[in-house]
Length: 60
Image (cartoon, rainbow, N blue to C red; front, side):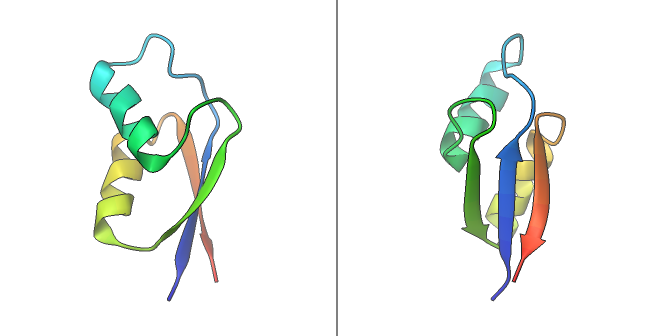
């Protein structure tokens, strides 16, 4: 199954509270943090919500 590599590239300072909560739910706490998640619609939706703060790559 494919995986997603999600990296926080921008600070959440000044962001909406729900964007901060989404980053925390993904497991991202600070700038430069990276997590690898399964490629599921839930994680794609979260990444889409904070697309201006993260980069997403597909990993096999």
